[in-house]
Length: 109
Image 1 (cartoon, rainbow, N blue to C red):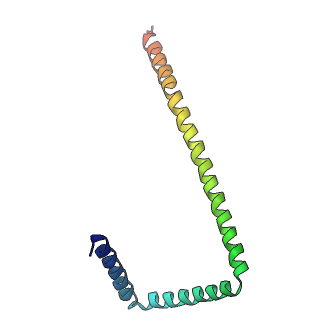
Image 2 (cartoon, one colour):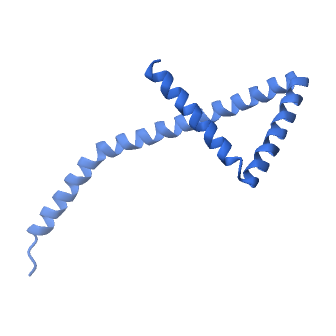
C-alpha cells in the first residue's frame, strides 16, 4: 500500500474517531441531528423543485462573481496606490533631505 493511501486511510479513521467521540456530547449530538433534518428537508425540497435549485445556484454563482470582481477591483486599487508610493517616496525623501540641509545651514543669530 502506498504512503498516500495510508495517509488518506489514517485521516479518514481520525475523522471518524473524532466524530464518534464528539457524539458523546449531548448538545453536539442534538445539533447534528437537527442540522441533518434541515439538510434532508432542503434536499427533498430541491429534489421536488429542481428549477428552484437551478435558480438558487445561478443566484449564488452571480453573487460570487460580484464578490470576486469587487475584490479584484480593490486589489487593483491597492496595487496602484503601492506603485504610486514607490514612485513618490524617493521624491518625498529628497525633499525632506533638502529641507533638512537648508534648515541646518541657517544659523541662528
